[in-house]
Length: 371
Image (cartoon, rainbow, N blue to C red; front, side):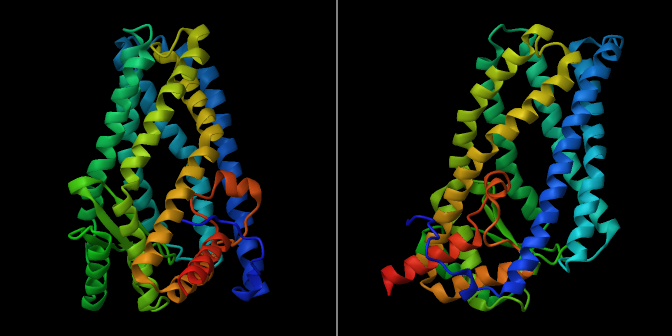
């Protein structure tokens, strides 16, 4: 796979100045909302870390029972803190023509996201509090268990998401997908369509699950007339490239490498307060985890961008259609207002994919290599 070097790439060959200005303006709004949301979350956690401990010790339900109550307060409280910013993001997307302003559909989606997030958070809270109360070096015991739990949720997500979708109904596109599956040696990978047009016009696709639960999920907005047949095939080939490279399993491996030092830092940060085993420290625990997450996000995004670039390269090799792939990235700028060349801090913290400029540069490199 080539580098993502964009030196010498003239964006004006692919995008008009008006398009670049629109994308930059939209992106600035998204960046501001992310910064405000992150700041609000940190402030809320600081306040909860000051207020809750004195109240928690009077609950009297035991360590685990108290941890569940505190965890519920934290999850619901942080959800409400983030709700106005999610609402503002919905309006911002609608303002720029990226989706309808359907508040009911949006709220339904928010509730759907809250349930699995709450379940995984409760499991993590009970695990950490329980182990920290029993073992001095609890992080050594917790690390493999956290990785197993994370792997389980990733595994079942493939089937859960597939249950809320339907098969490809375009026989021509389904035949194209089967051809790419044979090329990538991932024959039989289910490709499903998720209907999201009630709340967004943006196009997307992703891979969920691994092993027998593997599914490629394509949004119905990816299959409308804005995209050519070749562009749709390029997207499907990209996701099948993820499957072929086992990126989800590799991602779990990276998670395993991060969990141990994160839990060790957490143990050090909470030691003087009585440790993670004290439910009264849970707001501070979540605060530390949030800060560590923010600090490690740029490194996680480096890995993510590497995998996405590899999937792009596999897609090019499978379809051998650089024209459609390049047009796909140009279309993404119009349909999602992706900024082809975002600011450096945005690139470090918010971009899980290579920029559109980098992806187009890759297409040009592939074309030169393969004629």
